[in-house]
Length: 463
Ligand SMILES: Nc1ncnc2c1ncn2[C@@H]1O[C@H](COP(=O)(O)OP(=O)(O)OP(=O)(O)O)[C@@H](O)[C@H]1O
Ligand SMILES: [Zn+2]
Image (cartoon, rainbow, N blue to C red):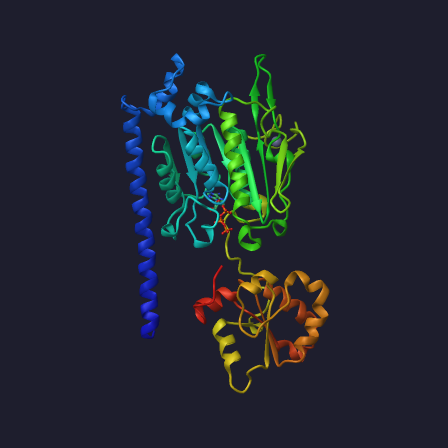
């Protein structure tokens, strides 16, 4: 290994240790804060629990009245509602675009206990919308970073961060300490897991999602016990979506983008529904059996009716529920966003970033290779390899023939994309109609532009 490589390895090892230490520090801070909260709970001069205990004589302690006065003034909430809010326990799954605003408003409102689950670390691409995380939190646990910011909003409540991936093994233990759950996650397996979990625990699930300029939210599995012992139950996620969508039909913020205020709006509305549920509003006022759709582009809200609860539903139906399954298998999709490494092309049709660099800079063959970038126009405009041309994969049905003709003008063609999956798909389409003698001239860049940035051009943005 040369000196530079040795230094690079040392630096990346030091970075890893630093990240570990930062997480340990957050964990310790969270422990100390927990101890302080429980001390305060036992301290009668300014106890959190007094805020709820004093409901018996109908008044709140001075600090709580002052602190929450603007919402206590609402006839919808009042002292009784505030006492309920201070006794409520809410679990938020996902400390991302939805979870951050939801948690901020719930902490501000004085929800007695907030649990926040996230396995991931803060990335700078998160900061435009995940406002509990700051630049200084880069690479540290999202759960800890969120908890730290929430404590700055309200030191009177208990906040428990869970730096784990919620799955079938740990979900029940974590969620059983809470009265309701907010689904602020970003993947289908977690949505089914949370649905089945909440049905099992008989607690509602306030579910939100946001992508590009659109968002939506609703409450699943709502149950109301009325005076005559009859239970009204709203539909659960499985009543509405009995089978998971094909993985290819599911979009993600990292692939398609999202305008920060869109999840901000949806997460905020999730918090509002949570507060309304906690103070005792029923299905007449809550988003039960209805889904609210927000279109940021047209600045419109629209509520659509959902299909009612299905008695034959495998989760909430008369004979359903009772156990959690393997949701990744059920959905045929991972619950964690991973760099999928498709292997569509044989090794002979693939080049590494370093090989491509050599090809492009070879004196004699300069300009004889065409680099075709198959990302969409916005991505190409953001950054691209100098001299490459853009043929977005989504337009190929229209211009595949034109592209094939163009490749014939060059000695060879290398397809590139962000991570090296779409580029293989396009290269395969071109290979399907390429003569055998030109086969070896059609290649794709292994690991895509991420690899280009890592191995050739450190100034090339990774997003
Ligand atoms: N099963 C799970 N357990 C814990 N956290 C989860 C689970 N599923 C999803 N999450 C978290 O939910 C959050 C969803 O938020 P969001 O999509 O805004 O963030 P992101 O994944 O960081 O964004 P991007 O797609 O731009 O990288 C993520 O922080 C993700 O780690
Ligand atoms: Zn159901």
